[in-house]
Length: 170
Ligand SMILES: [Cu+2]
Image (cartoon, rainbow, N blue to C red; front, side, top):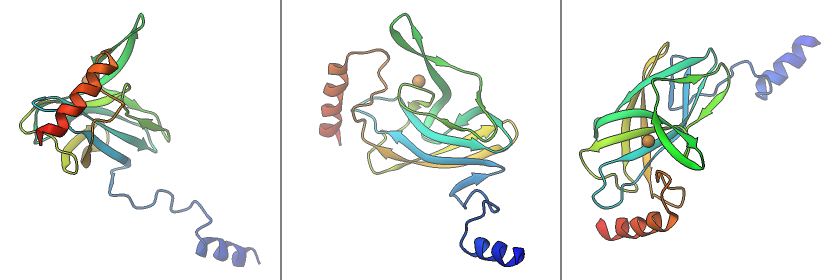
């Protein structure tokens, strides 16, 4: 009787046995979801990438690299008074079982010294290195700069203007 119920639940996928469904970037216990990188406005050689990281056992993001960027750093934003500033961090802690969300105006992967512009519709390859999981490859679709800018406490008007320039640039 008990076995029959168990079997039906299993067949319907109701039991959390298998846990994490197969994901594109699921390596060594680390799951990366929703990666994306910001398209660069005309001439800009810096951009940022965002994604969500989960590790059942807990881990630490210690570095990142990309073939399109001369330098890649892990950044966070902090408030100094009422000014938002970016800071490089040595590592990002991934707490066990919790999703760490890298997002605009929060933690992000900073892509610097870009060798080519990041165009909307393209993809950026990155390798994230974790303390335990080691290297995890990620492909991040490039999306328009949009309204959630990566300004360093800048004025919204500037961001809007550079957005227009990006469209002209091609
Ligand atoms: Cu940054």
